[in-house]
Length: 467
Image (tube, rainbow, N blue to C red; front, side, top):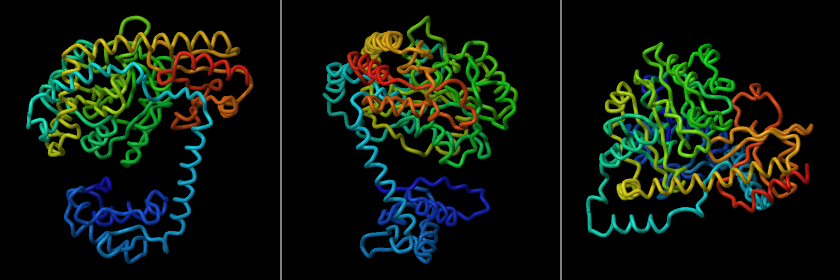
């Protein structure tokens, strides 16, 4: 269905129709809505935004009168070509960029992507067995929408898992299951105070940053020290929300020690409406020492918003994440947005629930830890063997490492040299919000989940030969 997600502000000085008009106009001018892009119908958009149809019609009429869109009888509304030359040019440029990126991807023989997982080791037989058992009976209830927060049984399983694996105690009533972290962050945006400023580690997980910015949030980047987010710098911001990845900071790989976790919790406890978003995106994969309990598990004042996902530990296509809210924010959830239907099909919830409870998930994690550890050791050994003038960072957990290279080349030059060798690596500078925070030697990210062991050594040797 063709929809537009517009962050409408009910308390704004601008009427809602004007907010819709501004949003669509800006999307057209920026080229995000290209020529002949089809807009949703007034009925569909009013239903999607939960506002009156006349409000949407007023916005569309203004856009029509100014020539930004045109109405095609029996077909709908489209971005106009005649009055959107700039938009057209930009859309053509973007189209060319997409084509260039596609061509570019074919230039690489080896891609050390920090995204994705090893699907060669996916437990297909176990997944088929669980799915077959779930669907063996004609259970009509599986095809109903189900609980808005996710099936209670599945939320209970998540709580049991968090207690056993992350040292956290929570109640199923405060767990919300959603189709990916992005969806949960968009829900969260409607719960936290409208004027809340969000502090983010710098460098950071850029997708979360883009989501916050797309929803109109003010984001303040905070530099890191060797323990994680710098609390002294955090205190100097006006932020009331801190987004962190303490178990394995993305992308630097820092594992936040207990004393820094306590400092961060103390920062949140100073004011009533301060909270910490803990993105525990790959805590399952740790290779040295015992797993460190989650920040959420150490929270005694109900200040941590915990977000976990099965996309990294099972498969990206699962698109299944979960969020545990503090009591105060859960009350707002019930008051403001509890009418949203669950975005995860009940069948998928049942399958993952059985996959966990029947022991397949634990066995799969154990297998993947061994697989990733072997790949990581192969990568580290290859770097030590071929990579002169380099230092490895963040190899204690996760599925990527960083490599500092001190040979006189810039990050851009390093990436380009690797490209000539048919190898794709990723510059650390791409993950900074404020490029002025970038310090130290040129550093590249090297992921090892999606490629084979043989490719790892070949890729590093190729890079070393051309450097």
